[in-house]
Length: 464
Image (cartoon, rainbow, N blue to C red; front, side, top):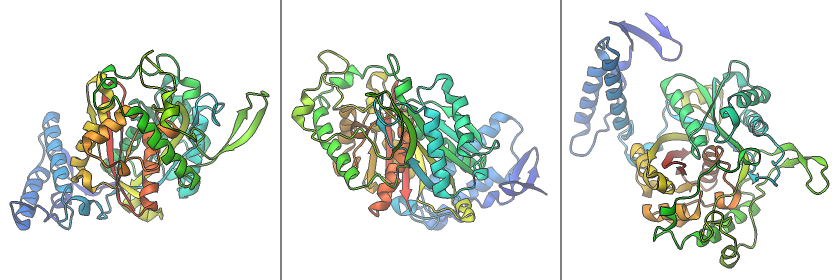
């Protein structure tokens, strides 16, 4: 008899190591409903899982991969039914020891690139600051954090060296691993999902998914390609750009004045050089500084196009160039309870899809339904959609095509109002979403964004 560090007793079967309780993984699931009875559904799930989990696997790696894929698909299908027989939204709100939960999600303020509060702050310093804030607010022992994934788009060398240094400066020990990743605008969300998947597999017990970008220091010609001409000329998006700015900037301004961002923002003390006097000062940045007052359709209509001479995309209907960082602390529910961590939400499912490169802005339109299907719910079950406003046209088009109520989309505004630090946004959205769901006593939310070169990503979350 052997014992695995995380999985408990295991028995050697042939050339493979199998959990002793493997055949019972689905044994308690009597949830198969619809055209078959609950009892038959439970029997079928148990029989199939017994078939795959109780037999020695062939030694061929390819056969093992096939078996593993079959197990994973069976697990995915069965997860759409709650352990108590519930389906859809009711199943998502059930609590189980293996749930991947969030115990802390914070961000820095988002500041204007080149002239805002973080214009003189390096990306690594932003990251170290938000890491420290997560440690302090959650009370997590830094020794418990085994891995940190950081999404970022523009840093030289992929950010690997500076992000490792940021973790050490924040107080994580040498034993805490750090890696960087880049999936353009979804990098922050990809980092969070990667950590969630590592937790699911048992690779780690506690991890952080984060995102950061200093567009002040790293954004320039060639960093981002021009917006799609096809989407620019799409008949349903052509007239929606200015209204999007008019609608969402006031949302953000109202939320800021009401203090609705305070809980998700970690104040950072930084050095800042006054551009008028060239004097270096120490300031505390605790609010987004890109939110503008007095936005009207008339004022937006006077702004010069940013790309094509005769184009309609400009600073009033596109996301702001910004600096910022965000971090999300994740673990299994059983681990959170053992460590005394307060749970604020849980991760359910995610999707990543490809779309036509010249129509990259439609990514959420394709990614959101896939994520909802994986979670076993419909759009009507969702209380809040956080869809990144890379450009007003693509965000409005996606929401309209999906049939989403504007009241459910970005209730506190979005990137047009307060900025889109590329690698940060995906993890920032998690903080914004869970904070707002809990504040309003709502339950289910979705985060999503379009992704450069023609992709989309989305994730489903439940607040607690």
